[in-house]
Figure 1 (cartoon, helix red, strand yellow):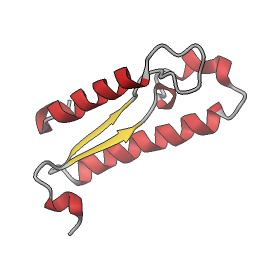
Figure 2: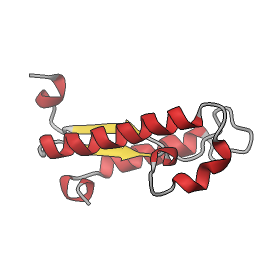
Figure 3: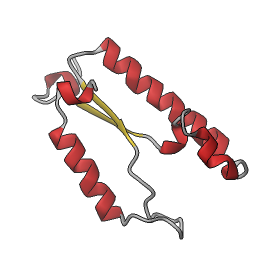
Length: 102
């Protein structure tokens, strides 16, 4: 039995990125160089892992989310780290099995 199985609230959070969205892939064509393709592929894989985990473990609340474009190095980013973190905490603490399956 894992620590997650022993917990009162069984929540899994995977930090993804809009760059991992197949539906929005065309929005990021300008990022073809600099490793954006491998980054996008890894985030797409994480999204599928999250989806499969939810199917295999319906007892878990499984969340994947993009923290937004955070000022952690990109000079044009729009969110301060503390804003992003506050949003993440709000999502995780308020997530329920019903909301997570939507």
